[in-house]
Amino acid sequence: MSTREELLLKMYDQMFNDINRHIMVVWQSIGVVVGAFAIFALVEKQVVSLDIAASIVLLLCAWLLAHLFDASYWYNRNLVIIANIERQFLKKDDLKQIHYYFGKHRPHKMIQHLRIQQALGLGLSGLVIIYHFLDRVVPGFSAPFCNFDPIRVMPYLLVIVAVLYLRNLWNRTKKSYEEFLRNSPGVEINTDGVSYGIGHGHKER
Image 1 (cartoon, rainbow, N blue to C red):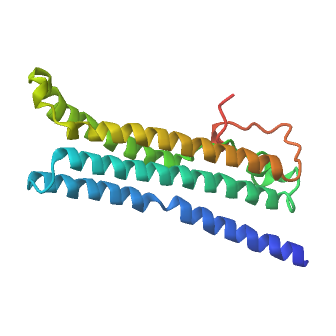
Image 2: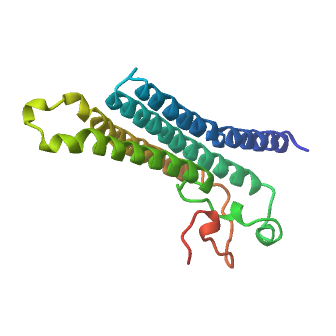
């Protein structure tokens, strides 16, 4: 085995190790759920207000989503490196005989594992904001404006800031991924006869 081949194989193993580390953000999802229960337990004990508690849970959800976006970028980027290394050793026939993923790079999309956790974060934040709206905002519709409590707005301001931040983060990761593909496309593989659909992150044909 040449020095180059040995280096490529070591890089191949390291890329998979990095992927495994980044998809283990499932523990962060569990932390968000546990944190939400703990914070709302403090609301029941009147240690913190519902406004503060809702804001903290929403902040935790935004933190989870940000990590998911980052993990998705690293997963897709490392998969490109893995595919490029495989192209150094595999041939066109291996698209059929081994696997077809190395023939074409996947688009910048989140894998199902991360999308499930994203659904958890969005669902939890949706429940919290709806509960806060019904409990703290709706009753104020019939009250005089002088009774308006500015702190009630905090969760909604946080949602706006989080959406802007997450949108910017996703766009940055997308541009970084596209830049990586342009600069490191790998050896060109003839993929005639191979259909890339939902199984590799592409749309169904």
